[in-house]
Image (cartoon, rainbow, N blue to C red):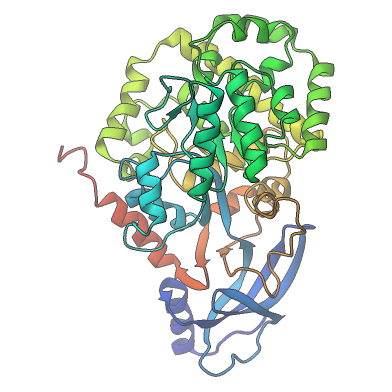
Length: 471
């Protein structure tokens, strides 16, 4: 017998109802749950968690009577984990939040890091514009600072070092959480960005500019590297020389360059280990977004029936993804797949070297990247790269908390005083990370969303789009 149970058919029906609905009460007791402590991998069994005003107030043995005016939710002996974070998204342009937000919550993603969007849309969202319904917490990156003209429509052109400084001042004054840097920056302009950002005490994060190397940005105290930009290339002697000479290159096209594919057998593990040592000592986070790269080069669905989640994305996005499969260049795809396979292995090597990894997906309209559920795909890829289920879970829970703390101590995530951002799953995710997909409830800022309401969120997104038959 696992903890307290109501007796009688009426009580059982009531407990099932509580699990399936949204509880709006300010105070609630989540009873009879096994706590998964990501800090040390410990399972604390048969506990109750008391929540008030969006925070955990107490953790007690299961079966205690709830205080007056506290709603009890029967956890039925399931497993409670901290809420998940997707640490690389682009959710705030082209109306994406309308369908991104409910899909994040439905899949246990309580927080996201928006790694650059259009200046106007990000300012509007931060001023209060948002779709109806629950919203994840957001870490706001600035629009990407890039060459002139910028590669992305949302990018901001940096033509001179003084322009770089002015843009950093402008963006810092708007209270962005970090300055995003991108592929096309010159060394001179990048260093001006870093210098001004350090003066204003705002982190610099993003790509490794293709004019530079990962060694350079670590020494400049860049806090993250997205998509493993130039990490693999820096481990292959001579590769950065021809990359630096390609002024119009971008990091995605680089992955399919035959010159890179042909050089993979010259990979120098000793050089890589020296780079990993610098990452570890500097605390430079890696955000691999493997699911995005795999989707572009590897996953090939021919029609909607092969991927039921296609019903969750707008028709134009769906058509673009299917066209990518039908019309893509086979040679480019083959080259990119080989580079992806080496980058995938690199994630396991980074982890073994003690480098910090953050789970992110690049959810936007990237091919085969589904908001919310693709975070689970990313964690599965981490397992395939050699991480344990606990270590993979940490990349979406504990490591984001450490990132947000920025060097300050991190308190336990399932303890009194912690934010009540929680996910209830049927089975132990430390046995199999796939168990994290079987979500039975999500608590966001102290509000409970049961399994039925989570399913409704997904259904409501599907209802936004015409079916194939209706198009």
